[in-house]
Length: 303
Image (cartoon, rainbow, N blue to C red):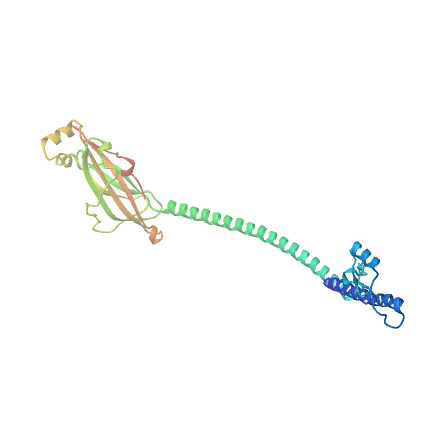
């Protein structure tokens, strides 16, 4: 609607200019009528004095009339057009635009408020999910603790033999709350100056697993013998007298270590296999001998 005002200004200016040009023609006609009446006058040569004056003044005469470049100049001042009336359709259009602006502002405000609420709800949901995850983890740990407390645990002990002098028996006792089934028993004997000279981790890869001839199931509190060792076994270990002498003087020691593998009868299949590593030091004396639990932590651990 605002582009109409420049066009109206251009039209008014053009009309005023045309009217001014039309008014200039009658003014020239009246000047010619005064000089000769109704009849056309004969051209007269200007007097010498007038010609001289015209020459001196720099004015030129074109057959008794001023030349074109001597015509008066008209300056037309075009007044500003009056303001156009505010029509009803313009009022309706302005009102509709104002309503759209208000609705747009209200819509943007509501959208921002909705986004803030969604952000708060998202944070609350994340907190609830994290709390649920923590609760599930705590429940899993509790369940695992319950399973561990109810599972079988084989503990290794040493007892003197009742029938063999200076003989000992290595026992595996179930100290858990559920039955355990022994599926393999590995053991080996190593001679070393002390515990520090033992291999860092026990290795039984070259030892054939000694599975029991019959399945051994230990109930809570029951025990089974894993290995028996006596003075005669210790004397038969050295291959040369020098090694026996080093054992008699305690320069070398005899370490008996092994691993017993058993199955949990109530745990899930992926958690049924457990093992217990054990290590004993045989004290070789001249008159009496002994067998005690010894060895680094890697030789005495449970899984």
